[in-house]
Amino acid sequence: MGTSFGIVWNPTKVDSGVLQDALDAALQATLGAEDPAPDAHWFETTPDDPGQEATARALAAGCSLIIAVGGDGTVRAVAEQLGESSKPGEPAGSGAELGIVPLGTGNLLARNLQIPLGNPQAAFERALTREAAPLDLGTVEVTRADGSRTRADFVVMLGFGIDAQMIVETNDELKAKAGWLAYVESLGRAAASTDVVDFSLFIDGGEAMPERAHTLLIANCGTLPGGFSLLPDAVPDDGELDLLVLRADGLAAWLDTMRNMVWDNGVKRIIRQMASDTPSAESSNSASHLRARSVRVELPMPLMLEIDGEELGEATAFEVSVDTVLRVR
Image 1 (cartoon, rainbow, N blue to C red):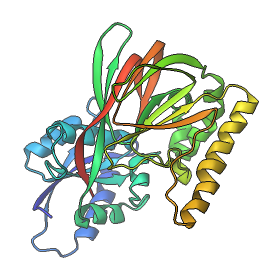
Image 2: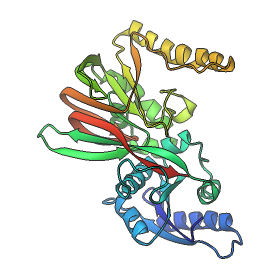
Image 3: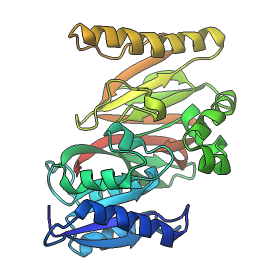
């Protein structure tokens, strides 16, 4: 690896001194007696800067590898800034590389990339020694109710409906104690407070597709905490987005959704893979799987969006695409 790397770390949930001491010990154990030792630069996030500015400082310091130490928000902020430093459409390998030491609740990207959880030393070792692989960076342009527009990047998924409402409903204290299981606790309230809405869906610049659903997910990765694959076709480096449209409204429709997830895209998919088949995700009346390179959504009212496990605010429309490829270890 290069002689200089940056560590963008989030100390907000525990005492910063204790955390940095533990992280530094894990880092030193990883480096061992390497001579000369790589030059590590530490950059702390703040409530006003979840990681973009810290990453910019790391890049300005000449770091060729940026290791995001924290939760999904920190990882997304670092990836977003790395995307800003790369030109759209450039091939994988341009710009600084991304490493991850997961310390958050969901750790969505880390789970999808099979980065060690709960073991900072193993995660550091992977980040410092593994050959980098391509990672798609998704971009969303959001239109607010007042007509203003904002932009954000994501590495896992975004959408509206149950997932966004689940984040709103999750108790922060329970989240700190129980980790990702706190999301499960809020799932019932989220489902009860999410309404079916009519909206327009545009795929790859095509004509409007009228939809009626309560949840839309647009994803680069599909595995959730607990190992559940919500979007089984999602691949983080294929240049495409995977969509899941959930329409269940009533007991029968929800049973159809569960059958589609557990049987069609679970057990049956595994059986087909064991037979050397390469199945695609199956849709049903209540759950549709789609693929696209770009997506536009027009909503009838402002709805809350989530992005990589965090609130993005309400939107009346949004456009999603994959324009940049990062390098991740």
